Structure formats: C-alpha cells, structure tokens
Amino acid sequence: MRKLLVIGIGAGNPDHMTVQAIAGLNRADVLFIPDKGAGKNDLAELRREICDRFVTNPKSRRVEFDVPVRAEPTSSYRSTVDDWHEAIAAIYEALIRDEIAENGCGAFLIWGDPSLYDSALRILERVRLRNNVAFELEVIPGITAIQALAASHKMALNRIGDSILVTTGRRLTEEGLASNAGSTVVMLDGKCAFNTLADPDVVIHWGAYLGTPDEIIVSGRLGDVGAEIEKVREEARRQKGWIMDTYLLRKPGEPEDI
Image (tube, rainbow, N blue to C red; front, side, top):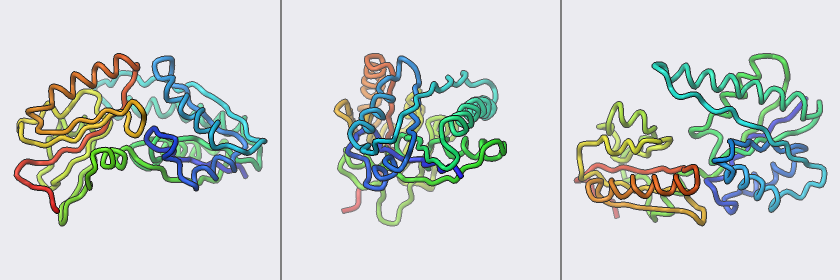
C-alpha cells in the first residue's frame, strides 16, 4: 500500500527542521511541493531549499503542483472553504495515484505543524473517503509559528494557573477577547483584527516571517503600537507580495509571572 507522510517543516527557518522530519524526507520517493502562484514564490522556494539541504536519498524526486486560489468569502465562509478544499482534494488524489508507486512513499511538506491551523489532514481525509486510492498516513509534527513567536519575543506563552486561547482573526472580530483566557494567540488574520478591540491597554506581541531573515517583531500597548503594526504589516506585504504573521494578546492589569 502507498505510504504518505505529512511533514511539518517549521515556521520558515530551515533550521526548524527536526531530526524526525529530515528522516521522513529521506524515506520518501516523491516530495510534493505546492506552488501558490507568482506572488508567493518564497513559500515554494523555502521547500526547495529544505530539500536541497537535507535530502540525501538519491532516488527521491520532486513534484510541484499548483494550488487553486480560494474564492473570496461569500455569505457562507464555511461553504467557500469547503469548495476550495474539494478542489484541492481532487489534486491530492491525482498526485497520490499517479506519482506514488503502489508500495511507494510520498511526502507533503507542510508549513509549521500539520495539526495546527492547516487543512492538509482534513483534505487527505476527503481523499480517503472517496475510496479511489488507498494509502497509509503518518504525521510528523513541526515547530509552529506560535512557538517561534514566543521565542522571538523571549517570553513564555502561559502564565501560572492561566489559560491560553488560540483563535483566528475572524473569530476575534466576531467575539472579541474571551473572558476566560488571559492570553489569546491569533492566527490567520488578514485584516488586523486587533484594531476591533476597544481596550487600548491590551498588550500585543506581534511577529511576521517568524524565524526567517525577514522577521519583524513589535510589542507594546495596543493603543501605542496598533497603528504601527498595521503600517509595517502592509508595507511588508506590499514588498514581498505575501505575509504570514501571528500575535499574542494579553489583557491589561494582569502582570507577568516571575
């Protein structure tokens, strides 16, 4: 039966690669590299750099494939994402069927960790449920943007006896800061949702291109640095054509533990 590895490659720095991930790359006969278009060439290039640096298996080969662009959300965000995932599932199915030998091994290189705000595993489950191609699945974890954010800001994510919420920019806009979480990590925020918060004393620790030579970090009171982050973010996105950023929010009046 075909073997499929889903490998977390870290938040953007090749040095984030774990020993387990490197071994996984070298077990694979074929390495799948997604191409998200001209504006995001850096994302594919990082995967190529990782393969160049760590793959020593002379029998391995690379297969690049185009990722369809997700449509702009309609009145039903979930429906829009569902259609997008269905289109990607068809591509995954064809790759597995046509590029991996019956008893061969293939690998998808996933930014960050496959189990945290990434849809590859859900999409592969769609492929499995179609029953057109059988495969065994193995997941290899990777360093997340959340870990890289905490390291770059030289802080611990948690405070003693306190909880952490991981959410999205869309949810932050809809729901605000949760009352039962002292720290909130926000991912997948394309619209600076922190600007929707009414309290200027909320502390933000923000980072983009975490762990890479292009890393940018800013922290402070939201009232002091919110506009700066928005400006810096837009300029960085304009220059590179894409941006990946993550941030942590903490409520005011709750000092750090020592």
